[in-house]
Picture 1 (tube, rainbow, N blue to C red):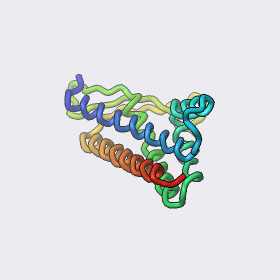
Picture 2 (cartoon, rainbow, N blue to C red):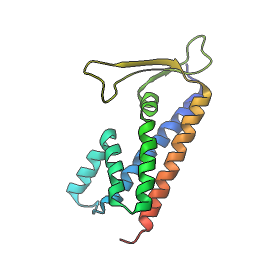
Picture 3 (tube, rainbow, N blue to C red):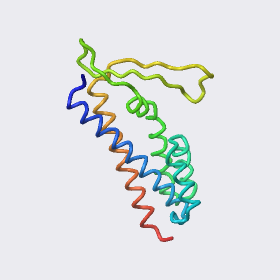
Picture 4 (tube, rainbow, N blue to C red):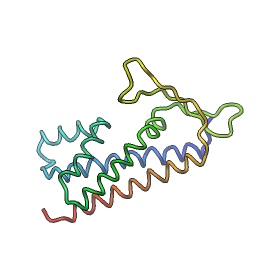
Length: 159
């Protein structure tokens, strides 16, 4: 059974990551400069939004469509997002539990890395210390705050 405290932290983390994805998607649309009310553009943007790999690629690509200062910030944030992808995927797609003798929550997750050969799956099954959970929440929050600042800076720029 997972503790109430853990479940609150888990919800905080997953929603922070969801809002980070949303902010990155909004930055992609702002960088594109297109009218989001045009049906074919809405469809294209939504297809990007629904695929996390495409979302990360398009977010990185948005750096090429912005001013130098914003571009540098997008690239920096993109690198942080990419560096934490396995943590986020494990948190969201892994099965969390507390074993009979565990003091920390555990997670079990099977995953593949992009360069893994076909049929190769990695397995993660380990306790996650509270400090790592706290650090992941703090990092996600910090990245979300930076994405919001980038979005605000882009909205403030003259067209």
